[in-house]
Length: 257
Length: 247
Image (cartoon, rainbow over all chains, first blue to last red; front, side, top):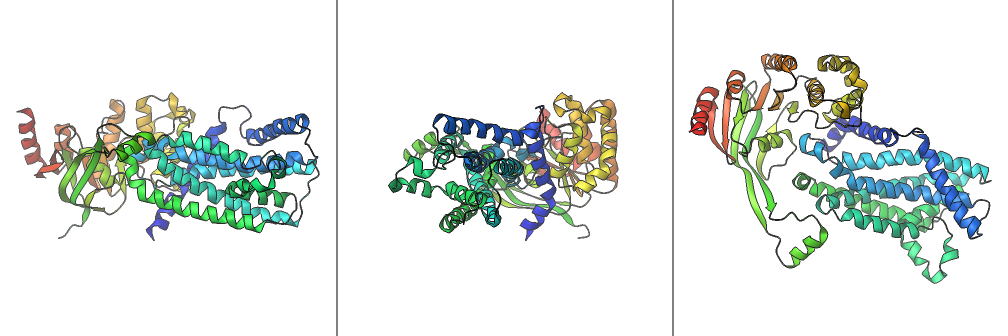
C-alpha cells in the first residue's frame, strides 16, 4: 500500500534524523562519541562503589549485574522521553513541510537505540574483566534486545501523542520512570530487598522482564520464558496501541502545536 | 478537455477550534469535561471552496490577511488536513512556503543540505550529485561549513531556495518568497522561477504585490473570509480586488 511507498520515499529522512540526533548530542563536547562508552562506565563505577563498598554487598560480577540493568533501563528511559518530546520539538517543521509524522518519534527512539548498542561494548569489556564469559546462552540476548526496542517505540508513540495535547505528560512520565527504575532491580537483587510475597511488584514490570532475560543471557543462564512472553506481549500491545493512537490523532497535531 | 487537472479542490472546508482559553494541561481538561465547559468557538478558515487548476496554469491567490490563503496552500501542500471536501493533486509538488523551515540551527550548511533535502523526499545519492550546484547557487562559499545559527536570515533563505528548487516540480507553491535576499539574489531567484514557468509548470502564488501577480500569473482566485469571491483571468480579478480594497 501507499504507506510502504511513502516510507520508502522518506527512508533517507529517517536516517538523516537519526544521524542528526547522534551528531548533535555530542557535538560540543571534547570527547564526542566516546561519552557513549564513558557515561555508562562511570555511573556503573559510582553505583558499584555505593552498593558494594558502603553496603558491603559486592560480589566479583556485581558491576556486570548493575551495568546490564542500567543500560537497558536508560535506553528505555531516554528513548521514551525523547519520543515524548519529538513531535513538539519538531513543531516548526511539521507546520511547514509535509513529512510522515511518525518519523520524528521513530528517529528519536532509533538514535537512542544506536547509542545503546554502541554502549554494549562497555558491557562486553566489563564482563570479560570481571570473569563473566560468554556461553551459548548469550544468543538469547537478541530477544530482549528486540523486545526493549518494541516496548520503547510503542510507549514512546503513545506518550508523543499525549504530550501534544497535554503538556503535563512530560512531568508525569518523569515520575513514572522513577517508579519503573526502582521496580527494575538495577542495583540490587530482588531477593535482597523484598520478601517473596511482594516479588509480584517486579513481576508486573515489563521492563524488569526484559532485564531478567538480558541478564540471563549475559550470565549464561537459561531464559525465563514466562518473563519473555510477558515482555513480548506488553511490547506488542504497546506498539499496536501506540501506532493506533498516533495514527488516529496525527492530523490534529498541527492544531495544537 | 485537452489539459489535465493538476490540482483539484472540491468543497474544501477547514475548521479550527478556538477554545476560549487554551487548555493544554490535564487538570484543566478534566475539570472542564466534568463541568461540561469544554466549549469551543468554531472557526471556518475555509468553506465551500472549489476550483481546478490545469497543467501549466499560474494561479494567484488574492485576499486580505486572514482570508484563508495560507491555510489553503497548506492543505494543498499536505501539511494541514481538510475538515471536509477533497483535495487531490498529481505530480511532484514543491512548497516554497517558508524557506528553510526544516533547517537545524546547530547543523552546518552542508549538513542541512542533506537534512532538508531528505525532508523534501530527495535521496542521498541525488543530493550528493547536486551538492556543488546548491553551494554555488546559494553563493555561500566557505560559510557552507559554518553552523546555521551564525547565518544571516538572507543566507538561510538563499540556501533554502537553492535546495527547494533543485528539482523541476510539476506544481510550485510560492508564498511571498520572491523577496528573498539582496537585489542580486532576488534577480537570480526570479530568473530561476521564470525558467520553470517557461517549462510549463503549474504555479500557485500568494502575494500582496499586485504588479508582480499580474506579470507572473494567468489566473487569479480572490478569497475573502474563507470563501471564493471571484475566480477568473488575472487582470479582471486583480482590478476588482484593487477596487474593493482601496475603496
